[in-house]
Length: 250
Ligand code: SAM
Image 1 (cartoon, protein in one colour):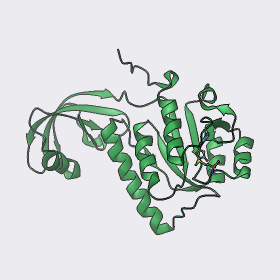
Image 2: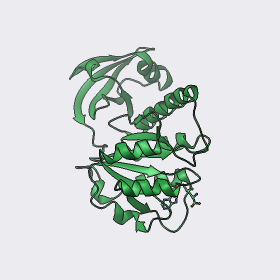
Image 3: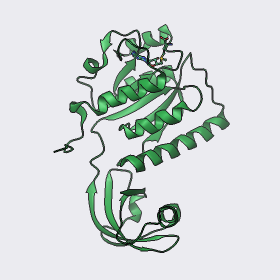
Image 4: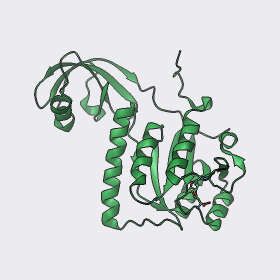
């Protein structure tokens, strides 16, 4: 079912609603939604409004709002993926998969062995692109929010900021603590750190440990940075402990 993210103030509780602008054009001209088809309007804060298409007006859709509900697709836990800048466009893949797997935010991080460097112009362009990828992935996967892609931070700053706000899960290939054991007892606010292709410098791992991070191993094989991020988020998303309240496949 097609989902559109719009601001809550625009959505009446029930009755007719005209979806115009970019969303309306996309629904009417690209998706060519027809009367009787169902769509969901989302306010980006877990609010959802079920609608039926009443009329395709070419550049906009006339919708009939038939009900509202709270999104069931949001984990109770807010996970920020702190991804050290990988080479090429891997961050686009990581962002898309992180949104599908329930991440709350994606935070690009610059660590010592990051080969990729963004200047101000590149950063603005990259962040806009990554945020669009997040929106598209949120629409496709049925999220109740659109995860934010934050402005990059230096690893040390990210570690210190994160340690003041939640639990740190530091993916470290030299760690001995297994991931599945290490995620037990996590709080509802978690920051998952993934190194770049070159890994973490020893002093970076030492700082993480000093700040109370859980140093976690994903097993005996060395995963690519993009694989490690997806593996960790999958491990949390699929763990029975973290499946959203009320979601159960009968
Ligand atoms: N240069 C490192 C080496 O050769 O040991 C490999 C870094 S790996 C390509 C990129 C990142 O993925 C690591 O910094 C870590 O965050 C994560 N990672 C990969 N394999 C892992 C594993 N088995 N356990 C924990 N983290 C892993």
